[in-house]
Image (tube, rainbow over all chains, first blue to last red):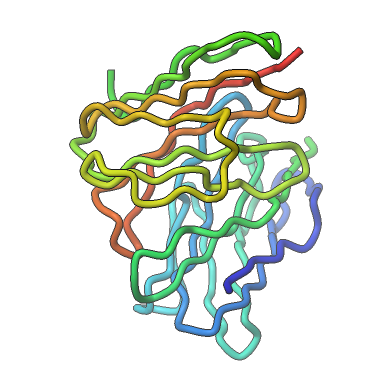
Length: 114
Length: 114
């Protein structure tokens, strides 16, 4: 079975500071990994995805994530936080093969302080 | 309309009522999904439809009944719900069910059961 653990249900950063949201996964087969963002009163929007190509993945809005197999991690980063980045962020995993569903983490709420 | 739309956006219903949630995707996708999003819990996949055929039902109580009349529309019929069913119900679609296919989410229906 696959699972995702997001460390920290709430992260608060100052505007202009580094954003780091942590995601660790568990999978017995090669994973595909995703980061989604959810703004208030909206659905989830894909930020980026890892599908076994480059280990450093660049997404929208200046976010990127690095797949580290040895650490079973897929942390999300952004060099400089903007007020508009305040939202809920979800990490998700699925397997490399077959029609397996996306398994989501519990989410991390990011607050950006002016 | 573009993307994935859901109606109504908010719904309050008593435990003896019958109501339906509607989802429509304007992306030409072949797979559609219902998720339940509760506070402090990961997204829970409820149902998956592929080419209008239900391919997954994750042990969802029978008081939730999905319907997919065509590849663009998905319904979730609700009857005799319980207060613990109060949640945000998200619809999503993807091109197909292949691993790595990006899912596009609607804004959700906020359901309150009184």
